[in-house]
Length: 302
Length: 307
Image (cartoon, rainbow over all chains, first blue to last red; front, side, top):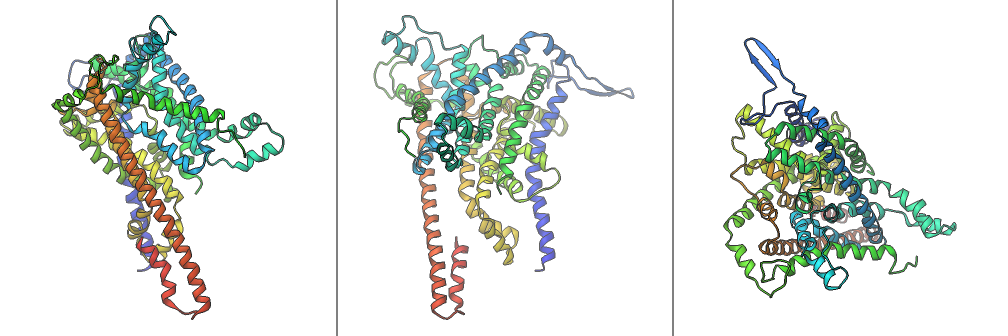
C-alpha cells in the first residue's frame, strides 16, 4: 500500500468519524434550541400543536409575525422574576453547602492510601447510580411532619412540636445537596489527588502552618476542581424540577417547576419556551465557565 | 507526614458517607414494614414485595425502561467513543469549538430545557416530514442517546488520554490500516472505559424522569414516570419495596463491575510485568547468545498483538 493513499484514506475516515456524532448533536441538540427560540415568539392557541405559525403566506403576502408578548409578560408578572431569583438563590445556597461538605470529603479521600481511594470512590458514586427519584423520595419519609426525623427528635425529648421541614426551602436544600453531592466530590477529588505533595511539604518546611498551607497552596491549586464541581451542581440545580416538586412547598418558587406547570398544566407552550430561553441566558455565563474548564480538561495534558 | 486519623476532613468524610447512605437504609428497613403508614413500625412483612409484582402497569414500565436503556446505552457508546476520538485524537479542525461545546453542554444543561427543546423539535419534525407521527419509545431513545453520548465521551476520552499513543503509532507504521488499528489496538485498551460508559449511559437512561415526560407520548411510560406520578401523591410502602430492589440491583452490578475491573487491572499489571521481564530476558539472551536470533526478537511484539 502506498503511503499517500493511506493518508487520504485516513482523512476520509476521520471526516466520517467526526461527522456522525457532529450531525447527531447538531440535529438533536442545537437545532432544538433554535426551535425553542422560534416558538417563544409564537402565540398560544387552542390547537394541535398549541401555538401559532410565525410565517404565513396568503394572497401573495408573506407575513412574519413575531409575538414579543411572551417576553413582556415575563417581565411584567413578578411571579416569573421571583421564580428566577428564587431558583438562583436556592441553587447558590445548595452549591455552597455542597462545597462545604464535599471539599473536606474529597480532600480526605485524596490523602488516603490508594487502595482505600478506589473503594471510597465507589462508595461516593454508588448512590448516584441508583435512581435519582428514589433518593429524593427517601427524604419524604424522613422529613415529613410525622416522619422519622421528627419522631426521633420527639422521642429524644429535644422538641415538643414536630418541626415543619417538609414542603419548605430547607427540605429543598437538603434534597439538592443530597442528590448532587457526588457531582461536587468527584471533580474535586480528581483535582486534589493530582496535587503534588512536595509543594505541601515545601510550605511546611518554610514554616507555613497547616491552615496557611491549605489557604495559600492547596485551595488555589484546586480552583479548577472547585469551578467544575460548583458548576456541575449550580447549573442543573437552577433548572431542577423534581426536588422542589416533591420536597418543596408553595413558598418554593423555582423556574424549572414553573416551566413544567406552564407547559403541562396550562399548555402554554410559547410562554414555556420563552421561560426556557431566559433560563438559558441566565445560565450562559456559568455554562461557558464550565465548558472552558471542560474543554481544557478534554484537550489538555496530552 | 504524620496526620491524625481523626482530622477534620476524615470526620467530614465519614459524616458525608453517613449522610449519603442513611436515607437509603431507612428506605430498605421500612420496605419490610407491615403498616401502610410508612413512618410507623408495626411489624415485619414482605407483603409489599408481592403487591409490587402484581402491579401490571409497573412491571410493563420496568420492561419499557430496560429496553430503552439498553438500546440508548448501546448507541451512546458508539457515538460517544467516536466523539472521544474526535476530541482527544483528531487535533484541530473547522468547527471544533462548536463540537467541544456541544459535547460538554449536555452534562450541565437542566433537564427541563433539554426536554422542552427536544419535544418542540419532534413536534416540528412531525409537522414538516410527518415523522415521528407518534411520540413514544423511539423519541425517548433519541433523547437519551443525545445526553448519554456526552457522558460516554468524557469517560472514554479520559482513558484515551492515559493510553500510550506509541502503540497505535507502531501498528500504523507496521502497515495496519486505521480501522484495523482501532479495533485491534485502541478498542481493547479503552474497553474498560467503554464498558463503564455503557453502564453509566444505562443508569442515566433508567434514571431520567423529566426528559422522558416531555418527549414521551401516550403509548410509552417509563418506570421513573410511573414512580413519579405515584410519589407525587405521597409516600407509599410499595415504592419503598421497589426502591430496595433497585438499590440491591445497582449494588450487585456495581460490585461485579468493580470486581471485573480489578481483575482486568491485575491481569494487565501481570502482563506488563511479564512483558518487561521478557524484554529483560531477551536482552540478556541477546548478549549471551547469537545476536541475530530472530525468534527472540519477535516475542514482545506477538505478546502485544495477542492482547
